[in-house]
Image 1 (tube, rainbow, N blue to C red):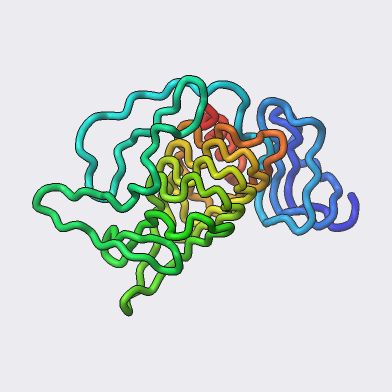
Image 2 (cartoon, rainbow, N blue to C red):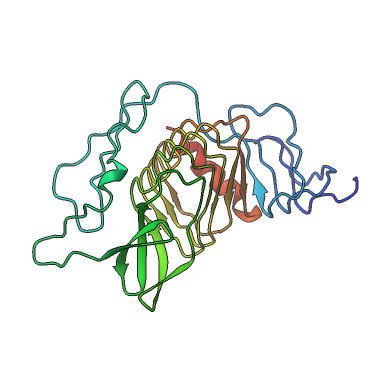
Amino acid sequence: PGTAAPQGTEIPGTAAPQGTEIPGTAAPQGTEIPGTAGSQGTVTPETAAPQGTEIPGTAGSQGTAAPGTAAPQGTAAPGTVKPQDTATGNGSGLNTLPSSDDLEDFSPKEGTAKKKTFTVKKIKYRISGKNKVAVLGTSDRKLQKISIPDTILYQKKLYKVVSIESSALQKLQKLKRAVIGDYVKQIKSGAFAECPHLVSISFGNNLESLGKKVLYRDSRLKKIIFKGKKLKKIGEKTFFGVPKKTVRITAPKKKAAYYKKMIEKSLH
């Protein structure tokens, strides 16, 4: 082994033997697992890569998106958006997802009060529970980097940021990097879909669920980081259109295989 060998296991493919160390320089602590559809050769760890397991090439697929299931009819509950995220048969994109311009149009049920919305540092929030808020969108559609904080202070009160609503940050044409706070547990359908210049995104320690098409057609993504070990669900087509041959996906070593299976299922 060479100098500064990784403290983990590189698994060149699904059929590769475990436990083989491959020398590298400043490699991440974890396991690199090339994704399905056949990665070419062994992936070399990058310098100063984040700790965890890299699962390159598991995302996206070229071709036509399968027609989705028709969205249910009815009235949206408060703080939710009707699941109108069915892709067209020709894979043309999220043309049926709700527009980001409608993000604050959350109609409450009869007899309930409309929950308060506000903006802090160009990010729009809605109070979703006791000392909790959800991200609704941004007041600046030209943002190049967005960081969802762990907490925010509003009117002398501290709130935890626990979720990102459907289509909240969809189609941000200038967005290149996104960092999600550690208290965010749920990211709903299409939240970061069709951001054509997004190259990296990092999910926090407590993420449990990714909805449908969260990263749909983000064709320039190069790095996806899962910091936590609590992810249990990845929705359909979340990784559709992400470049499978060039993207690097990093996850905790003990969760790498499990996350890889969920990612593979989310391609369709």
